[in-house]
Amino acid sequence: DNESGATADNGGSNRAFVVTTEERDLWQVVQALQEAGYGVSQFEHRYVLQDEHGGVRLATKDWEELDDFLEKLEDNEDVNNVYHNAT
Image (tube, rainbow, N blue to C red; front, side, top):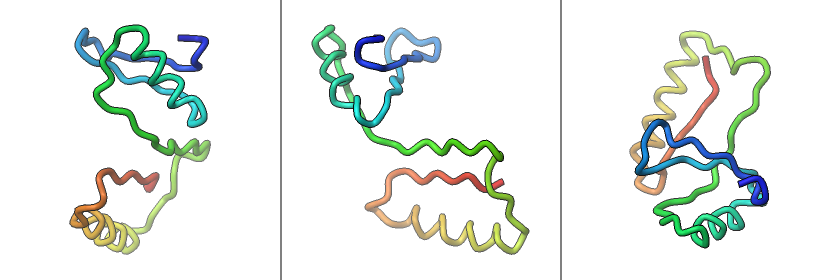
């Protein structure tokens, strides 16, 4: 929907699709989908890293530290999703 500022990708499925929009437009997009008759089962805000350099390169020892840190985050019941740009 160009008016709401969203783009959609259903990944080849007719049952569900992912809509991507700017943070400021999130609620407007959700409302526009609902008004158009779509059932919105989930919506969330995510930061998407836009890194023109392809991520942060880590040495082997740094990977071990990152793995330990990520495991601790995953063990925390309050954390749902974790993303990083390490390569």
